[in-house]
Length: 102
Image 1 (cartoon, rainbow, N blue to C red):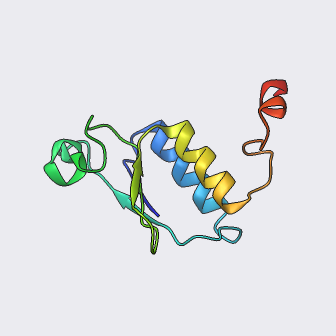
Image 2 (image 1 turned 60 degrees about the vertical axis):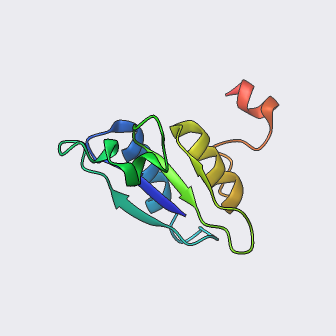
Image 3 (image 1 turned 180 degrees about the vertical axis):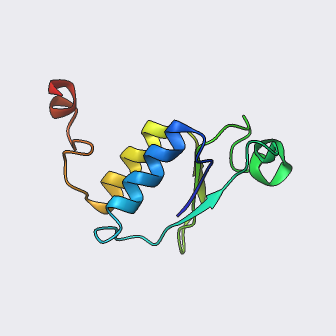
């Protein structure tokens, strides 16, 4: 899992923080790749392969033996990280009912 974002972006910081705070609980390997928005790197062809809209944050999931896929909406990325790694439910609940109650 490769997390792409810029520390100037609040949604990117939220994802980076979630992964970093829970690094001991993460079951999947992950890395952070900084995308420099000041240099407009989010509009480069390499980044646009991950997110055609050209916005940060984004995530590349490299799954062994399966198709790779990309995500580029911060809440969806954080939910995926939580569910995939079975993080405590105070980050994101596992059920819609619990999510609605929060």
